[in-house]
Image 1: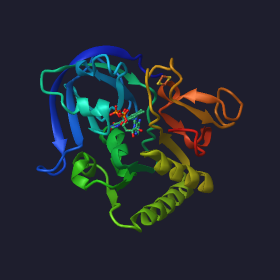
Image 2: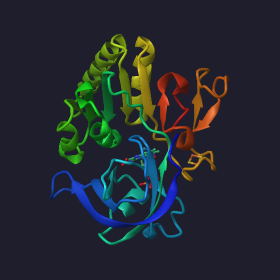
Image 3: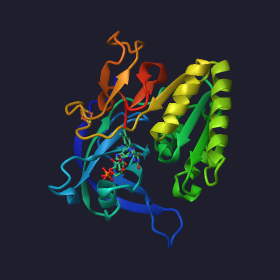
Amino acid sequence: MSPQPSCHQLSVLDLVPFGQTGQEQHFFALRLERPAWDLWKPGQFLMIRPHSFGQELPWGRPLGICHMTTKHLICFFQSVGRGTERIAQLRAGDQVQVWGPLGNGFAMEPDVPTLLLAGGIGIVPFVGYVHFHPKPWNVTMLFGHRAPVDCYPMDSINERVPVDRLHESVPGDLENLIYTMRERISEYAEQQGLVLACGPMPFLRTVHRFAQEFGARAQLSLENVMACGVGACLGCVSKTTEKWPVHEKRNWPVQVCTHGPVFWSDQIDLSEGDAS
Ligand SMILES: Cc1cc2nc3c(=O)[nH]c(=O)nc-3n(C[C@H](O)[C@H](O)[C@H](O)COP(=O)(O)OP(=O)(O)OC[C@H]3O[C@@H](n4cnc5c(N)ncnc54)[C@H](O)[C@@H]3O)c2cc1C
Ligand code: FES
């Protein structure tokens, strides 16, 4: 059972930019004091709302839980718009409101060969995942990214599991990434392995398609735009398939914030126009 979410005022400990110094920075590790959460699972997320959001930005922003130690809660984010730009201006000692842990999390089957597929900032939940996996030698990762690799929290993953990296920088790289994803998903399907994916929607659609083609056991973490984060506003819904366990009805819409963000790929319908 997922732990009950709760709301906390937390102090910012520090905010560390990633990527080359001297250039405009868009990637940040945010370290907060640890909230009193007994349990959490990699793949769960939180809603964060700094005081600086004021009245213009009434809703918090969803961020994955990157890692949690006995003292710290770490988020990692890319600044892409009004909310994340303000989060990127936080300073040590600032207070933020945090609501979590929210949603479900990724399956962890220690003895099963597990392939992590990360696209860009989708690497975030896998930092905690590889750290808490009791048999990391059963885990490998394929990471496709557009920004330079030093923009991402790669080191802590590299220390524990082998990572294949594909930097998409010239035409043709994307085809190579898609080809490699297909190969790897087919391998893991053959060995009854587990495939876990997090990344932008086109990346997830590709994983979804290959998982269907090869009958792979795959989970996808969806990053639909969210407002309330607790199932009330219906702003984040995605359609399910007839495999969805609760309603045996195709296209039944479910809230990603409370029923996800992680879904078994055969239970969710990602056809174009269904999700953000
Ligand atoms: C469950 C979940 C976990 C997430 N975890 C992380 C994380 O760990 N790190 C991280 O950097 N981001 C994460 N995101 C995405 C993050 O929440 C958005 O980037 C953020 O809400 C954008 O807010 P903004 O006000 O800065 O951008 P806005 O001003 O609202 O939008 C700016 C641009 O970003 C796009 N955008 C808005 N929301 C999203 C979204 N959810 N996904 C992709 N693009 C979006 C908009 O379409 C627009 O083009 C997560 C989202 C979800 C739903
Ligand atoms: S964000 Fe409001 S229902 Fe999911």
